[in-house]
Length: 142
Image 1 (cartoon, rainbow, N blue to C red):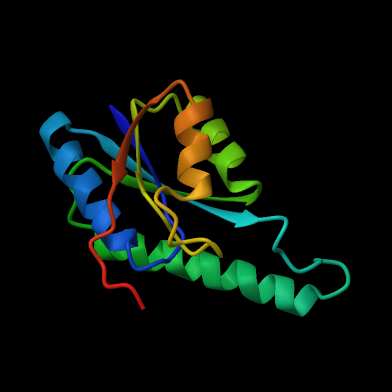
Image 2 (cartoon, rainbow, N blue to C red):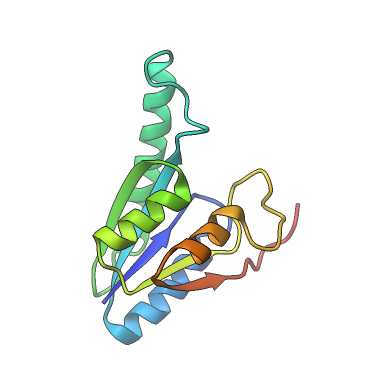
């Protein structure tokens, strides 16, 4: 079994991973951590290569840190980084990796993070044919 966990570094990230880990341990599932750099918000790699490379490096470091934080997970963790529209890339990776479940937060770092269900979560929920577990944020509003 494989569980895909889209992560964006928001406050809910660790909560989502913990929930996926709990489910994963019951089914001996491999965890796949995916971060998508939104190409709509990405700095132009040709006009500002240093800034672009910095964003990529920060994202790679986040994934590396998360993998290290959960290195005791017994069924394996793999990381992925993609550039594109987040919901589209989540669905693509879910299909390419033939995952059994997507576990994601109800909101993330987006501009409208206070909406009931984040736009990325909503689009994945409505466009993917995979089973999806939405983790409600248990964090204080700022």
